[in-house]
Length: 206
View (cartoon, rainbow, N blue to C red):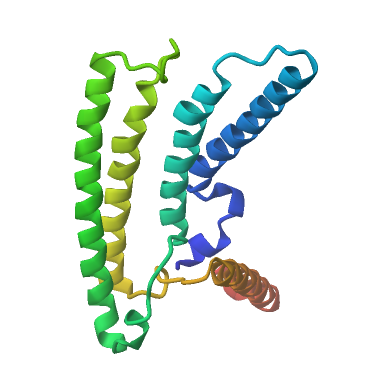
């Protein structure tokens, strides 16, 4: 990781462009379901199509955005019982090959999902027996798996160049600890640089 990446504020990380919309949709879904339950219980007037909206809109958005965010943060489940016992010199090649294979699978899902989305669009698919349009979320499938294909290809290339140190994290808690350590190291490096500059003002001016 470069010094520029280490000094980058947490709120500037690109994965937040995926995570923030997912969080917003999650809270909207929670509010919608709670409001529906309260209105149904106390006024016998539930919100129309709540189940269909949740099933065909909220959940697909949250799930597919979550796939992309998890890949960006390296938080997908890793079955590494054999991988961890491989020689260090071969790990990067194994990781690259597996990433390419996973990218091929995701590309297949994206292609199939595109066909299904186009078909759903053509027939103007609705949610169950309701009149609620439900074809739009079908395009999330090719979008999400297309993005994951690119992410996995990028991971394969970076594995060949830098190895697996930034890609294989089997425990999400470990990932959080690593991020905290990286931030601490970045702060310490910045403090050392400031101290050196203060101690050698002439060299800084040169």
